[in-house]
Length: 45
Image 1 (cartoon, rainbow, N blue to C red):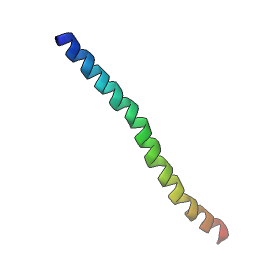
Image 2 (image 1 turned 180 degrees about the vertical axis):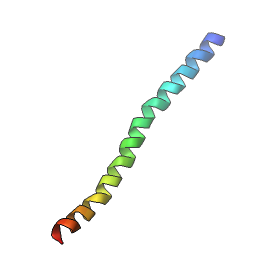
Image 3 (image 1 turned 180 degrees about the horizontal axis):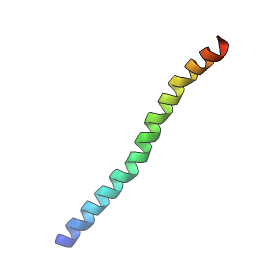
Image 4 (image 1 turned 30 degrees about the vertical axis):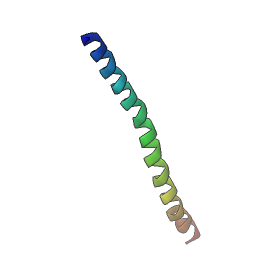
């Protein structure tokens, strides 16, 4: 019973770790997209 509990918590932790990179990519891409118009305006001006 205790062993199953530890395996379950380890699996949950690994799932959380696997989700984090996707969240960082998801937040990084919109920030880059927002910065592109600013760069274009700087180049045009």
